[in-house]
Image (tube, rainbow, N blue to C red; front, side, top):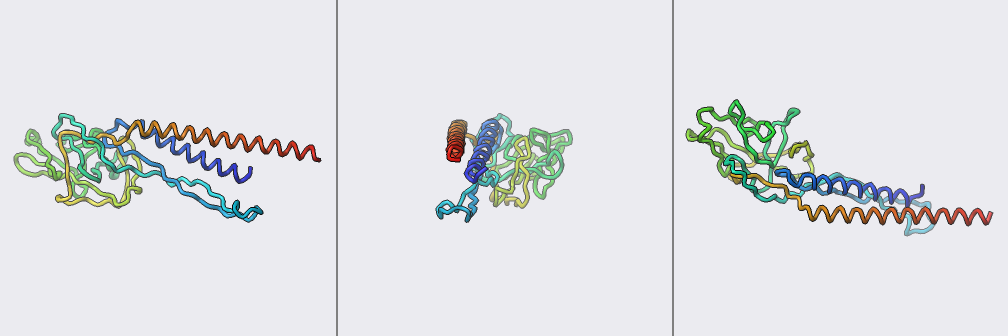
Length: 247
Protein backbone atom coordinates (compact mmCIF):
# COMPACT_ATOMS: atom_id res chain seq x y z
CA UNK A 1 0.00 0.00 0.00
CA UNK A 2 1.50 3.37 -1.03
CA UNK A 3 1.41 6.59 0.97
CA UNK A 4 -1.65 7.96 -0.85
CA UNK A 5 -3.71 4.98 0.30
CA UNK A 6 -2.74 5.66 3.92
CA UNK A 7 -3.79 9.30 3.54
CA UNK A 8 -7.18 8.26 2.16
CA UNK A 9 -7.58 5.73 4.97
CA UNK A 10 -6.93 8.39 7.61
CA UNK A 11 -9.54 10.62 5.98
CA UNK A 12 -12.14 7.84 5.91
CA UNK A 13 -11.49 7.07 9.57
CA UNK A 14 -12.08 10.75 10.34
CA UNK A 15 -15.31 10.70 8.33
CA UNK A 16 -16.51 7.65 10.23
CA UNK A 17 -15.76 9.43 13.52
CA UNK A 18 -17.72 12.49 12.36
CA UNK A 19 -20.63 10.26 11.35
CA UNK A 20 -20.65 8.55 14.76
CA UNK A 21 -20.71 11.92 16.53
CA UNK A 22 -23.51 13.29 14.32
CA UNK A 23 -25.57 10.12 14.84
CA UNK A 24 -25.10 10.35 18.62
CA UNK A 25 -26.18 14.00 18.56
CA UNK A 26 -29.38 13.12 16.69
CA UNK A 27 -30.08 10.24 19.08
CA UNK A 28 -29.90 12.69 22.01
CA UNK A 29 -31.84 15.63 20.57
CA UNK A 30 -34.61 14.92 23.12
CA UNK A 31 -32.27 14.29 26.07
CA UNK A 32 -32.60 16.97 28.74
CA UNK A 33 -29.47 19.08 29.09
CA UNK A 34 -27.56 17.23 26.36
CA UNK A 35 -24.72 19.21 24.80
CA UNK A 36 -24.00 18.71 21.12
CA UNK A 37 -20.58 17.18 20.46
CA UNK A 38 -18.11 18.24 17.82
CA UNK A 39 -15.18 16.05 16.75
CA UNK A 40 -11.70 17.54 16.90
CA UNK A 41 -9.08 16.63 14.29
CA UNK A 42 -5.51 17.68 13.68
CA UNK A 43 -3.10 17.42 10.78
CA UNK A 44 -0.09 15.19 11.27
CA UNK A 45 2.59 16.05 8.70
CA UNK A 46 5.16 13.38 7.91
CA UNK A 47 8.25 14.30 5.95
CA UNK A 48 9.65 11.77 3.49
CA UNK A 49 12.89 11.96 1.51
CA UNK A 50 12.01 9.01 -0.72
CA UNK A 51 10.43 11.09 -3.47
CA UNK A 52 12.31 13.15 -6.03
CA UNK A 53 9.55 15.78 -6.03
CA UNK A 54 10.19 18.28 -3.17
CA UNK A 55 6.52 19.34 -3.03
CA UNK A 56 5.48 15.74 -2.34
CA UNK A 57 7.79 15.19 0.61
CA UNK A 58 5.37 16.56 3.22
CA UNK A 59 2.38 14.25 3.63
CA UNK A 60 -0.56 15.29 5.85
CA UNK A 61 -2.60 12.72 7.78
CA UNK A 62 -5.78 13.22 9.84
CA UNK A 63 -5.55 12.52 13.58
CA UNK A 64 -8.59 12.13 15.85
CA UNK A 65 -8.26 14.30 18.98
CA UNK A 66 -11.62 13.37 20.52
CA UNK A 67 -14.65 15.63 20.80
CA UNK A 68 -15.61 18.91 22.43
CA UNK A 69 -19.01 20.00 23.68
CA UNK A 70 -21.02 22.91 22.36
CA UNK A 71 -21.67 24.83 25.59
CA UNK A 72 -24.54 26.83 24.10
CA UNK A 73 -27.62 26.52 26.32
CA UNK A 74 -30.67 24.58 25.19
CA UNK A 75 -34.17 26.04 25.30
CA UNK A 76 -36.11 26.24 28.58
CA UNK A 77 -38.84 23.60 28.72
CA UNK A 78 -41.60 24.00 31.31
CA UNK A 79 -42.44 20.82 33.23
CA UNK A 80 -45.04 22.01 35.70
CA UNK A 81 -42.87 20.85 38.60
CA UNK A 82 -41.72 23.87 40.66
CA UNK A 83 -38.64 21.96 41.83
CA UNK A 84 -37.30 21.27 38.34
CA UNK A 85 -34.67 23.78 37.26
CA UNK A 86 -32.39 24.94 34.47
CA UNK A 87 -28.92 26.38 34.99
CA UNK A 88 -28.94 29.90 33.57
CA UNK A 89 -25.38 30.01 32.27
CA UNK A 90 -22.43 27.61 32.08
CA UNK A 91 -21.71 24.80 34.51
CA UNK A 92 -23.13 21.52 35.75
CA UNK A 93 -24.90 20.06 38.78
CA UNK A 94 -23.06 17.36 40.71
CA UNK A 95 -24.82 14.05 41.42
CA UNK A 96 -23.74 10.70 42.77
CA UNK A 97 -22.62 8.49 39.90
CA UNK A 98 -24.33 5.07 39.68
CA UNK A 99 -20.98 3.29 39.87
CA UNK A 100 -19.58 5.51 42.61
CA UNK A 101 -17.89 8.88 42.63
CA UNK A 102 -19.33 12.11 41.24
CA UNK A 103 -20.98 12.79 37.90
CA UNK A 104 -22.20 16.06 36.40
CA UNK A 105 -25.36 16.88 34.50
CA UNK A 106 -27.38 19.74 33.04
CA UNK A 107 -30.65 17.83 33.39
CA UNK A 108 -32.52 19.60 36.17
CA UNK A 109 -35.20 17.07 37.06
CA UNK A 110 -35.63 17.04 40.86
CA UNK A 111 -37.28 14.31 42.91
CA UNK A 112 -37.35 13.56 46.65
CA UNK A 113 -36.56 10.01 47.79
CA UNK A 114 -37.91 8.22 50.86
CA UNK A 115 -35.11 9.62 53.01
CA UNK A 116 -36.12 13.19 52.07
CA UNK A 117 -33.03 13.68 49.89
CA UNK A 118 -33.09 15.49 46.56
CA UNK A 119 -32.35 13.22 43.60
CA UNK A 120 -32.40 13.46 39.83
CA UNK A 121 -34.80 11.54 37.59
CA UNK A 122 -32.53 8.47 37.71
CA UNK A 123 -32.55 8.34 41.52
CA UNK A 124 -28.97 9.61 41.99
CA UNK A 125 -28.66 11.99 44.92
CA UNK A 126 -28.00 15.62 44.02
CA UNK A 127 -24.83 16.88 45.73
CA UNK A 128 -24.83 20.36 47.19
CA UNK A 129 -22.09 22.46 48.79
CA UNK A 130 -18.99 20.46 49.60
CA UNK A 131 -20.35 17.43 47.74
CA UNK A 132 -22.94 16.71 50.43
CA UNK A 133 -26.48 15.40 49.71
CA UNK A 134 -29.37 17.77 50.40
CA UNK A 135 -31.90 16.37 52.88
CA UNK A 136 -35.29 17.86 53.75
CA UNK A 137 -37.17 17.01 56.98
CA UNK A 138 -40.30 14.98 56.12
CA UNK A 139 -42.63 17.42 57.89
CA UNK A 140 -41.30 20.32 55.76
CA UNK A 141 -41.62 18.80 52.28
CA UNK A 142 -44.86 20.65 51.61
CA UNK A 143 -43.12 24.04 51.68
CA UNK A 144 -39.97 23.04 49.79
CA UNK A 145 -38.73 25.52 47.18
CA UNK A 146 -35.53 26.27 45.23
CA UNK A 147 -34.30 29.84 44.88
CA UNK A 148 -32.57 31.52 41.93
CA UNK A 149 -29.20 31.14 43.67
CA UNK A 150 -29.75 27.41 44.20
CA UNK A 151 -30.76 27.72 47.84
CA UNK A 152 -33.09 24.90 48.92
CA UNK A 153 -35.41 26.11 51.65
CA UNK A 154 -38.67 25.38 53.44
CA UNK A 155 -40.89 27.59 55.59
CA UNK A 156 -38.48 26.87 58.43
CA UNK A 157 -35.44 28.16 56.55
CA UNK A 158 -32.63 26.92 54.24
CA UNK A 159 -31.71 23.23 54.28
CA UNK A 160 -28.95 23.29 51.65
CA UNK A 161 -27.94 24.69 48.28
CA UNK A 162 -27.72 23.21 44.81
CA UNK A 163 -24.32 24.29 43.54
CA UNK A 164 -23.15 24.78 39.97
CA UNK A 165 -19.73 23.34 39.10
CA UNK A 166 -17.64 25.01 36.40
CA UNK A 167 -14.90 23.45 34.31
CA UNK A 168 -12.44 25.86 32.74
CA UNK A 169 -11.59 23.23 30.13
CA UNK A 170 -14.64 21.35 28.83
CA UNK A 171 -12.35 18.74 27.26
CA UNK A 172 -11.83 17.10 30.66
CA UNK A 173 -15.47 15.97 30.60
CA UNK A 174 -16.41 12.62 29.11
CA UNK A 175 -19.89 11.06 28.64
CA UNK A 176 -21.02 8.72 31.43
CA UNK A 177 -24.50 7.79 30.10
CA UNK A 178 -28.01 8.99 30.97
CA UNK A 179 -27.10 12.61 30.25
CA UNK A 180 -24.26 12.60 32.80
CA UNK A 181 -20.58 13.49 32.45
CA UNK A 182 -17.45 12.54 34.35
CA UNK A 183 -14.59 14.96 34.91
CA UNK A 184 -12.04 16.37 37.34
CA UNK A 185 -10.84 19.85 38.19
CA UNK A 186 -14.24 21.53 38.57
CA UNK A 187 -14.93 24.42 40.92
CA UNK A 188 -18.17 25.34 42.68
CA UNK A 189 -19.59 28.75 41.84
CA UNK A 190 -20.36 31.16 44.66
CA UNK A 191 -23.95 32.13 45.49
CA UNK A 192 -23.55 35.46 43.69
CA UNK A 193 -22.48 33.67 40.49
CA UNK A 194 -25.20 30.99 40.52
CA UNK A 195 -28.36 31.55 38.49
CA UNK A 196 -31.17 29.00 38.26
CA UNK A 197 -34.58 29.06 36.59
CA UNK A 198 -37.18 26.86 38.24
CA UNK A 199 -40.34 25.27 36.90
CA UNK A 200 -38.68 23.55 33.94
CA UNK A 201 -35.55 21.97 32.55
CA UNK A 202 -33.03 22.69 29.81
CA UNK A 203 -33.64 20.92 26.53
CA UNK A 204 -30.94 19.54 24.25
CA UNK A 205 -29.05 22.12 22.17
CA UNK A 206 -28.91 19.77 19.18
CA UNK A 207 -30.31 21.22 15.95
CA UNK A 208 -31.62 18.24 13.91
CA UNK A 209 -31.38 20.19 10.63
CA UNK A 210 -27.69 20.96 11.24
CA UNK A 211 -26.91 17.35 12.13
CA UNK A 212 -28.82 15.95 9.16
CA UNK A 213 -27.01 18.33 6.81
CA UNK A 214 -23.71 17.28 8.37
CA UNK A 215 -24.50 13.60 7.76
CA UNK A 216 -25.26 14.32 4.08
CA UNK A 217 -21.94 16.18 3.72
CA UNK A 218 -20.09 13.29 5.39
CA UNK A 219 -21.71 10.82 2.98
CA UNK A 220 -20.70 12.90 -0.05
CA UNK A 221 -17.14 13.23 1.23
CA UNK A 222 -16.93 9.48 1.75
CA UNK A 223 -18.22 8.87 -1.76
CA UNK A 224 -15.57 11.22 -3.16
CA UNK A 225 -12.88 9.45 -1.15
CA UNK A 226 -14.05 6.05 -2.41
CA UNK A 227 -14.03 7.36 -5.99
CA UNK A 228 -10.44 8.59 -5.61
CA UNK A 229 -9.38 5.23 -4.15
CA UNK A 230 -11.00 3.42 -7.09
CA UNK A 231 -9.33 5.74 -9.62
CA UNK A 232 -5.96 5.15 -7.97
CA UNK A 233 -6.50 1.39 -8.07
CA UNK A 234 -7.40 1.55 -11.77
CA UNK A 235 -4.28 3.65 -12.44
CA UNK A 236 -2.07 1.05 -10.74
CA UNK A 237 -3.65 -1.75 -12.78
CA UNK A 238 -3.05 0.13 -16.04
CA UNK A 239 0.55 0.84 -15.03
CA UNK A 240 1.18 -2.82 -14.17
CA UNK A 241 -0.43 -3.90 -17.45
CA UNK A 242 1.78 -1.54 -19.48
CA UNK A 243 4.93 -2.59 -17.63
CA UNK A 244 4.03 -6.21 -18.32
CA UNK A 245 3.74 -5.52 -22.03
CA UNK A 246 7.11 -3.73 -22.05
CA UNK A 247 8.69 -6.74 -20.39
